[in-house]
Image (cartoon, rainbow, N blue to C red):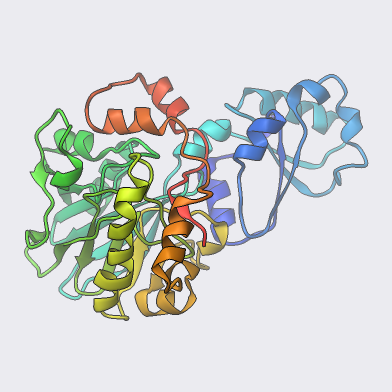
Length: 376
């Protein structure tokens, strides 16, 4: 029976910055678009169809003594290949359970910190997609910010912490992944919050997320203060939690800034993006810890696997915040943009409630990396 490595086990290795070697069996074009990444991850792409009948060709290319994690799209091809590799003397080979489909959907919780009047803030890291969700718990209640569609993970975490999810919050209408905010709120009987300027076409009821309408979680002074910060979308709204944490959605990342074009409004929204980054955020405390909704580069993960940075440090180090000339900034965020996320228009329609795809279709729509950032 082949040895198996789960998404959770691999995630822990990557977040602990361990050395990992991955043999990826997908087609070359799929591998080039999207792969498992880590600070000390190395990999070799050998398409399954090209080696399955001649695994001996890998001898001399891959050291037989090293630990090897074999990955395919859904997990079936890797199981077959692992057995063949073991037969020709590879010593420490693992079948990656569920393949890239499982990797895309795995969430790993990391504690960010305690809140001053009791409770804690957690970040859920979706390593395979670069999505970041947040779980705020205090005095038996919880709020989940930018939840992804795998809502059972948040329900299980709430049960483990013995808290009730009272609020789900989307900082904006997402275009790179399917939100679990409305679904989760319906399942737990909570309140779903969405910025009204992003909700003009939605087909469901929601509670407006607007500046000045604080949200209380628990009986302590844990508050979420919406801060209107357009640019990535016209409704993008940041959250200040406990006076210490700034949840920026897709406006500001650790090593990049948000893109304004995913609703076809780049020229119209670039001014809003600049106003948010160079004026609204600039007026906030440098001591705020920035917690974004995505990361694009594995180097953004800290040693504990979380993604964060202090606002003051980003104004010194994030190149997207260093473009003083307005014309140069406009050119940066409207010219030579990276490819748009896979099926982003369908994802937006789904998040508006206009589509309700089957699960396999949702997985297909979300395949590949997030592409919400502009690297300056």
